[in-house]
Image (cartoon, rainbow, N blue to C red):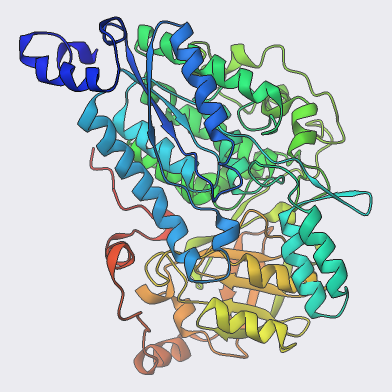
Length: 556
């Protein structure tokens, strides 16, 4: 209790005077003080409603006998940052969020925390902070957006990016594009498919540090407000029982999360974030674990962009717990993992039911017998690269073709829109990795352009950058080592044959060792110059993608 070090006793009278300046009473100071980390802002659609969530959390904390005090965390909208220099700043905010939250909590002292995130790097950043701080903590997100409605069908942001490609290819008119623009994002909330934000909010449930419904209850539903009140009340139980994040986020919990990731068909970004969160817990997640788990985990969900169902559909079908229940039927979960309810994950899902087998396939009738994500290795990516297998067309699971090489996202987009990419090509975008970008930009614009122009069943894209959860097609990212650190991707030339075999987890540059050695003698590694501020620091300090692109390497 912080009373012992900050509140009680004559020596802490100056501290109490400042608490009184906040309008706090002696009665409030006698109770556990709970920090509410609010990611509310007016620029991210998934965060504009978080003020309502925070107020509900405060009520829950107060009802349960605590004193809630809010302080902020930053958040970037990846959709708005997409396709320009702003995307260089997205991934780096994960560490800024973790570091700034650590600083606020250590500087002021709290007995417990309620994290209120929603979108993209905000969720893993606060999960990293929770693990690092290791005081009783619970998460409640802002919830997903409802799907848009266009021509009688549901739609989402990935379709909007693809519509730009369709317009460029002359497949839709400017007027049709404008209608898409107005209809795609109809409410506040994180974008409505199984993109990065919703992936991480769902996995927060599986990790055990968020209550049931955290990942799926739509942002505009009143049930989201009720969930926030329950989170506020439950953090007080965690404080009383001294249940901490590292008691919950154990190796068993991370294995459960990877298993659920495969079943749900989560964003490839989870392969960056789960290792980074585990790192803060002192746990190493090897990328090979992903393939090991994927081999025995069926893919049960095809939410957008992989299919035509959305987060609201998953919620109505029983949510994350219904998916876990299906996985438990075939013995794939560690049911002993402790959760923020004070019960095990097994106890939590005991009554869960799959209410819609069209949205959540039964374990004995999956979309595929293997999981939604695959890690590929070969001479082009000896430390691994990642693909969302569940969003790849059947005919592209095995592919070989000539490389079309670009040293930036902008170069690739210009070539795609100019019609320079042909069926069978393998687009290579390099110098976009964690250090080389810097910032490891998402390649949603080029992948959406390829899909919108009708080439997603014929063209693969490989990058040392990363992809949005909204990406579909044979989009292979996180190539490690990256180009700027001497990875083979730096030495690929136009016309080189690249072979991809996703079922066999392999990727190779079909060039002789002798030729590769010769290229390394003559081809120069291109490093960005003139970097300043946080981008410069990030480029110097960040780890490779296969290690989670982390700054704070756990030292034990």
